[in-house]
Amino acid sequence: MSTLPRRTLMTSLLGVLGLAATACTSAEGGHRSSPDGAPGTTASPVTVENCDAEVTFAAPPQRVVLLDSAPVTTLDGLGVLDRVVARAGSFPPGYFADELAARLEQIPALSEEIDATGHLQISQEVVIAQRPDLVLGLPDGVTREGLAAAGAAALLPRTYCGDLGERARFEALYAEIEDYGRVFDRAEQAASLVASLQERVAAVPPAAPGLTAAVLYASRGGGPLYAYGATSMATAQLDALGIRSALEGTTERVFEVSAEPLLAAAPDLLIVLHEGDVPGHEVVASFADTAGLRALPAVRDGAVLPLLFNFAEPASPLVVEGLERIAAWLAERGAAG
Image (cartoon, rainbow, N blue to C red; front, top):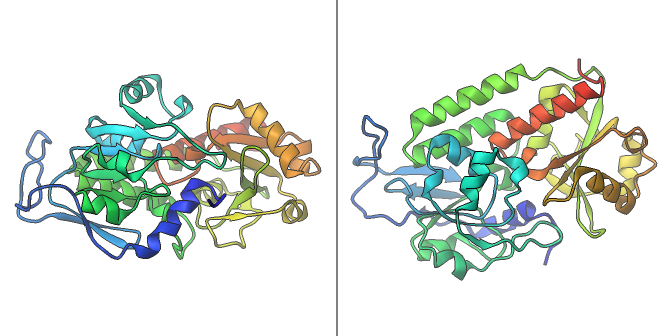
């Protein structure tokens, strides 16, 4: 099994995704909102482009299986989290307000088994047994073809779609929310959520001029060290703050990195992404030891911010909260502009 983080593994599945997946509905047509926001019917289905696939929905999904924590705040913002019938993976309470975390706890968990590099361990058969019409996430061993054969569509965050071809921007997040609004027949809610997020991004103060940063992911147990490049939402966050990425010459979203280029780049700040319930100070200590980076000025100066993974990747409302958290940390350090 590859040791790349699970969101990298997802991209390896996309080379065989030529077919169009159709949600498990009747063939009578698509949908339309009634005045109270409830789904109705209309003559044409909704089709969205998702990675290398066109995914068609004849009606809004009613049985959703979550195989990734990132879409939770989008679904909640659209008012459709009650459509989720099962979840699998890690859903740390640190991502969510108490009320939302309590609602998530009420959703049956199919698997909470995550390996050392963050990969969800679950079989496709367990997912299909839930009779979903939409699955959010494609961990290793779950494919669009297998789900489509059982009548289920699948959607991935665009960030996981491989070669995006352009630097990540918050506009990608807004477009993704709008797609979800179309799929779930919640266009007005999607527009309201996008407007709120745009206001929050615009309100974030810039960092002090001239700062550089690297965003890293350290595997548990001394595994490989990964860095995030230009097509990662972590770069969009740095851009919004006016911070230059110390590894901005790399167009990949995520890539394995050794200590040498980091020591050569000597970033002023380090953001260390992690998953699970390990306290932040333990994440920082373990990262510095296993990656051999104690000689970095950022480590010596304590300029290392541990951040739960979904606060930086993939594109979701959590990334806006992550941006705000980075800005607050900079302000505490006296590094705000």
